[in-house]
Length: 345
Image 1: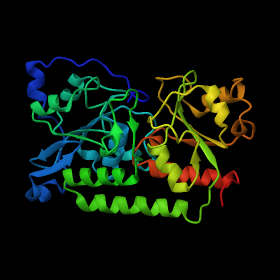
Image 2 (image 1 turned 45 degrees about the vertical axis):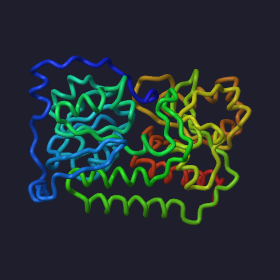
Image 3 (image 1 turned 90 degrees about the horizontal axis):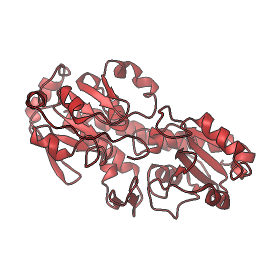
Image 4 (image 1 turned 180 degrees about the horizontal axis):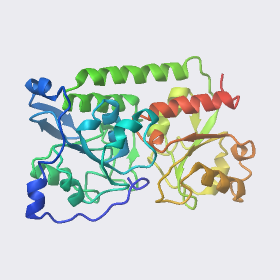
């Protein structure tokens, strides 16, 4: 997506790449052989029928969101590569992630992905596995490599052709994230792990929001860019966070996923709290929370905002602001932040 990745040009296939497309190093997890009897498996995904003849042994995940799901499912030993990161990996996944090759910090080339010898390719965004991204799904599938895209990016009401990061006419729900977890668990033959992970996430949401009353509190979510800031519209992951805690998004009337909105308009809306993306990448201005806060407190259009004057900031990882396993982390942190600020019971 435009906020979170560069889009390198596609490279032409050579005969050597054709030979590497379906092979590569890596050993199957111990339960891969035991689950082989359950294949082939077909998963309906974003208008594609994804058929796997066996459990993937060396998959490539092209976005941090799908990578962290696979690592959370205990599938690090079946990853041949990852790419497109905005944040450090989740703390409890550091060890599992350490042995997974990082193909690129942003979008890798098609050639680089094929060199990893993938037998399955996943992505969080249609823009990653689509025209202008790493490659189209059809390009991989012509080489016999099944692909999967997060259903949160092709859910009913999501229009990825409207420019930027697309728009949503219907709000995203966490069910799309839970569905992705179950799909990927099924693809790899670890269905029970998927069910257990979903149950843990649901319990975390219940715990974070139990007894919470944030009604009347207005929030603004800032992902990146100081000159033309990407601020959350109504219906993406920040919308799911806002609804879970019962607060209000000052740009809930905007259906674009991440519209670029001028600071004068922000001043007119004057949010009670600013939720700030604390990113470690370097592809936009004001990526880190420190840089964003410095800008807010010195820029003429923002330094007199209520949230800025009262230093009402809540910091989130970039991944918590994308539809991902970390959106649950976003609910936890925003709920805790509002309680700490005395704005929620």
